[in-house]
Image (cartoon, rainbow, N blue to C red):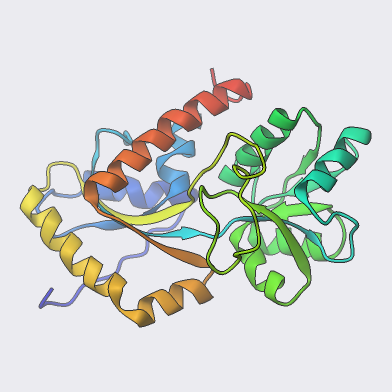
Length: 261
């Protein structure tokens, strides 16, 4: 960009605090932000937030997806997702699973999977990834889903049964997607860059071009993989279309589960 960038971290509210500040920023192109799936898709569908997903932002680019495997411990008898589902069918409400939090994207996704399979598996609420990993490795839950499980797969502490993305993860080429296994569901836990609404399209393109150069640097992709992310690029319009599609699909899913009206 030819000038320094000031990074401002605004944590809180599952990302809502940061997106609220971004939505209210001047649309002069000097302020843009990083966004993940939760604060722009499921959270605005479940509660009031000070911004509207489809109205208050300009979309710059997507740069990654968090890897999201559904895993069991390696010393369990479940070798495939079908093994787990069939056990759940024989033992309703006996099996358990954890995600980083109740009504998180992972919780909603797996409840939709179990609903399609017509089985009952209990979700165990925890307060984040660290507690989820501790509970799972301690044998307090039967399964779990989140990106921090990826290093545990390499360490052979957990076994991945399926991933929630539409395509297989490059670092887990032998793990099928839920789509491949016959479940009509896939979500991308994306990360990308957005700006306030009203930013000049020429500025959006300039930002997108600069960020794409950073994305193309091999060291960037190497870092993302070690951090549990899959490098995935979508330009402005493709990124916007995906977010809007996920927003609509998630709204239908939440109504089906009875979480929202």
